Structures are given as structure tokens and as C-alpha cells.
Length: 490
Ligand code: ARG
Image (cartoon, rainbow, N blue to C red; front, side, top):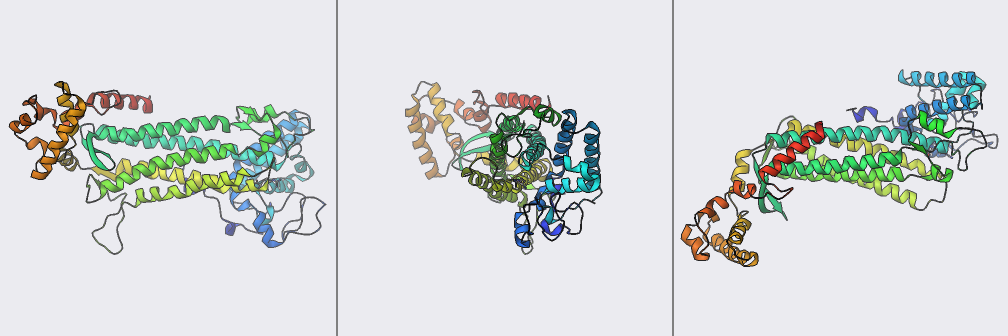
């Protein structure tokens, strides 16, 4: 998996004003002088220049911008809009920008405004007049939409891979704990014992749905807006299908206005990422509880736990706490996008520039959290079977099974339920567990009880009895483990 932190875009403070590639193409570099066209006479106010610029973060899209421009230039050549030789020059120039960037020599300044202008500007510097043909039949509006979709498509695949690693880590723990039981809860009150593997596999199911959502949205995301130009299409005889195919898109937008103003894919992605975070956070919360002295179901290994600066005895679950805490920003980005888009008239509006940081941070946070939780499962926790065993045997979570036992003897469930409720009340008063009651006491309650009741309420039997499809019975769990294994490794 790629280390997302290594891809963090430089903040504005790292922008170097003296670097090349600055300023809108055809404009004057440095000092914020006007550059869009000859319509402008005065330069931008420096604070407005800073306010308007996205280069501080959209440099993240550099590779995709180059890919998109290469496809566009090639298409212009094959459609006869420019000569094939000119197209080849453009492609070579764009590849040179890529090399400069790899060498750390492409550092556009604020006055470049955004990555699209920065690349074009540098191309013109490198190639002269030929460089000025690149933007034929294209606008930054369809260009930015193309770049963003290419970028996100790649990240969706990375996140899918991270989800798979997370699921495999869950499965490995589940397989290692195939015989371990854990109290099952409702309302965070002991309810019925379950297999620990069953509990862990529940999170695999959630992650599988997450992957399904990514698959669905990837399909819609994979539609090419390039060629919609500013909003209305272009009189230039372009071939949208050619660029779309070259960039690996499944299809093209049918409507140019929709093409440049659709950000549904960004919302869908942030919604899917929010659910990923919800799932990670719920597991994180359980890990935090389990590591507490009160539960003591797991130990945190030194690799993934942290100490306190003051209390020498502390070992803190910082990793799951951070995962839980990072949900806020991801949910916030989803909300931010929805609000940003909802009042926008067609077609492109500069508001859209705000979509990038939301997406970048959502991707980075999801990847970081998935990786951290996978590592936590792989080497950060160890279950304490003795504690889990003691926990499942020391409560009334087998009470339903007493009622079910009576049902097998022909007692209607509601009547059995009432009888057992009374029995639990007496036991609580006397400080006894159900398993401590002598047979006479059972038989006083109902003559249908016999010696078999003790086996029926032993935790292992309680679990084994839940044979219904998808239940926690050992046979069912074995089946679920095998299915999950072939799903994740097949
Ligand atoms: N930096 C802009 C963005 O992120 C690129 C598109 C600008 N288009 C325009 N018409 N000003 O959305």
C-alpha cells in the first residue's frame, strides 16, 4: 500500500515564487500581474492572488493533469486540429515537465494560480508557440473534472486494497480464535455468548459492503467530462471518445453542462468513506473498551500502544482513539461538499475549487485509518482467552436457553420466559448463578426439568445451539470462516 503521508501536497508556504512555471500562460510572471487575456490591465491584489490560488493543494493532481493533457494533445493531432508533429512535441514537452517534477525542479509559485495553468505555462516556456496550441478545444473546467476523476479512481483502488488488508487481518484473528467465546451484548449489557470469530467476522461483512460501495461509485466516477470545454462543448472537431478511451474511462458525459458541474462522484465517495470510518470507529470503540481494566479482554502490545507522560502505569489505546476521533473530519468533508454544491447554478462555479482539499483529506484519512487498524489487528492486540472464558461463564447470558429448554418440553415461550425471569430474580437475591441451582430447585419451578438442563446452559452448548443460518453456532461460524477465506483469497 502506498504511504499516504508521502503524498501530502505541499502547503502554500512551500511555494517558491522564483520557481518557473509561474503565472497563467501568456501572462506576466511574478507580482500577480494580470495574465488571463489582454482584457486585463492591472495585476491581482496580492491577497486576492493568494485567496484565488489553488496551486498550494492542487499540485497533487499534477500526474493526472499531465496524463489528461497528453491524451488531449494526441487526440488534437489525430483529428487534424494540429499536426501530428506538433502533437508529438506537446507530448514530449509534457513528459519533460513530468521529469522536472520528479527531480524536484517543477515548483510553480502562487502566481501560477493552479496546476493547469502552471503546466501550460511551463510548456510554453519549453516549446514556444507550439505550447500555446495545447488548450485548443478545452477549458480548465473540463480539465479539472478529468484530473480529479483520474486521481480519485486511483485512490478508490488503493482504498479497496487497504480494505482487503483490513479484512484479512480480521480473518486471521478470527481463525486464530475459532474456539474462543466472548460475551455478546445488547445495550452494552451481557446478552448471549457468541464466538469471538463470529464477532470479528461481522466487521468483515461491513468492510465487504464498503468495497461494494466503492465498486459502484467507481463505475459512475469513470465517466469522462473532457471535451465539454467551458460548458457548451466546442466548435473544434475533437474526438471525445478517443481521449476518454486513452485515459481508461468507460464512457463520456452525455451533456456538457452536466459534465463540468457534476460533483456527485465526490459526494458519493465521501459518503462511502464516511461509512468506512463508521465501521472502523465502532471496532475502535470495542478495542478501547476491551483494553480497559473493566473488560480486560485484550492486551495492547507495545508496538501499538502509548504511554502517559505523567502516570507510569498507563498504556493507552491511542491508535483506536485516533481512528474514532478522525471520523469527525471525514463526516465534515461530506457535509461540506453537500453544502458547497447545493445552491450552485449550472454550470462551473469557482466554488468547486473547494472540493479538492475535502477529497484529498478524506482519502488520506481513510487510508491512514485503515492501515492503522489493520496493523492493530495484525500485531497490536492479543486476546486474553482466560478472561473471556471467565466472563462468559459468570452471568445470566444463558437465561434464554433455559426458556428455550422449556419450549422443547412443550411449554409456550412466553410462559417459560416469565418463569425464568422469576428464577433469575431469586438467583440474584441469593448470589447464585443458574448453573449453581440444585436439580430440586429446577423441578420446583417446572417438572419438565431434568439433569440435561446443566449441559443445556453451559456456554459452549448455548453457542453451539444457535445453528440458524448466520447464527453463532460453531458449525455456522466454521462455514462463515471458510466462505470468508475463499472470498478474501480466492
Ligand atoms: N482551480 C480551478 C478549480 O479547482 C480550476 C478550474 C478553474 N476554472 C475557471 N473557470 N476559473 O476548480
